[in-house]
Picture 1 (cartoon, one colour):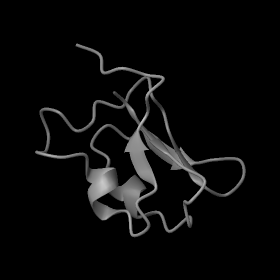
Picture 2 (cartoon, rainbow, N blue to C red):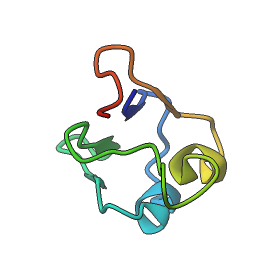
Picture 3 (cartoon, helix red, strand yellow):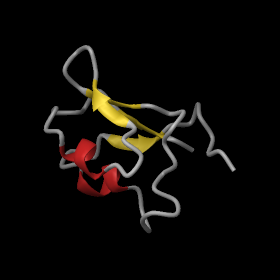
Picture 4 (spheres, rainbow, N blue to C red):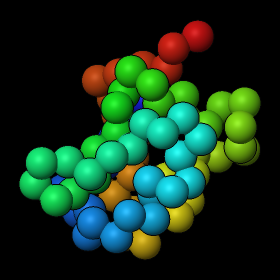
Length: 70
């Protein structure tokens, strides 16, 4: 699954800097968003999704609406 950022986001930007595919950007309402089309869950880059590992409020979670691309 791709990852998504929930409404719990505090807009700290920690997730954006660590994304190896540049899939994270600041959204229209000040919270960050993940482009599910380019999110690869850091597979091939890291052992775990970097957005989730650095998020201080656990707002980066798997997106059930977008399964991982093979």
